[in-house]
Amino acid sequence: MKIIFRCDPALIDLLPRPVPARAALPGWLRAMAPRVESAVHGREIRTVKQCPPFVDAMRHGVMLVLPCDVAVAPGMRFSWDWPLPELSVPGHPRAPLSFHVPEQVAGSPLAHGVQSALKFNSFWTIELEPGWSLLAMHPANRDDLPFRTVTGLVDADRFNDVGINFPAVWLDEGFSGVLPRGTPIAQCCVVPREAPALAFEPMSDERIAGYADVASKIMAGPGVYRKGFRDKEGRGRA
Image (cartoon, rainbow, N blue to C red; front, side, top):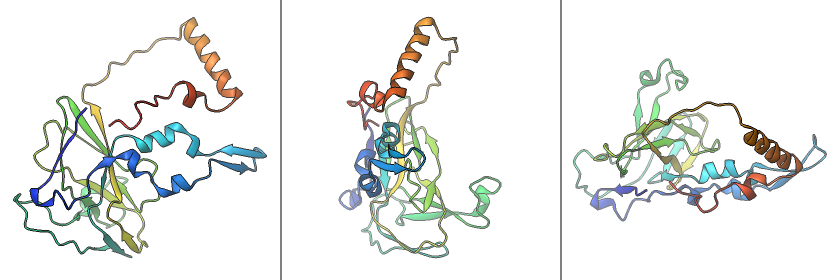
């Protein structure tokens, strides 16, 4: 799978580039202890740092990042100092953020009173191979971020002449500080557009035996999935 990112010629050396999601893992994950003492178990237990599905979800696909520092004051007041050169593309955004009026999410769980929704503006167009779509979502397991990116699916094999913007809801109204350049804003995965065929059937004797075998191994000790089933070679693919 090849993903082509394009930007205005004047920005090619200024913009931070999308990166494989595995290159944007947060510091807290690296700092986590792999095991901690559990009062319930009376011994040390493994943390999510040693859970391959948890970590692999964070490593999967491509991460789009904030193009410049954005200062945030309480009450959702955003500012930035990001002088850009003259651009070649007409109608191209120059601000890292824009906004949706509250009415656009009225009646949905995304509504937070009269609060506007954010929109992270895109400075890259994204082109996929025919038959594939781009699933854009909040960076996986990143509840530490003060916003929540709204999930969307775009047929980027067809829609790739302009950038895909990423709406988000701001969650921490008391936040005061800076979202630094490079902050992950959207994790994107390439998915086939063709709907899967669904099949339903009872387990065969062979499947029942396989279930019992794997279940007993899981009960006997950790690492069964990681050692015997996880595709280490394919990790990090889009």
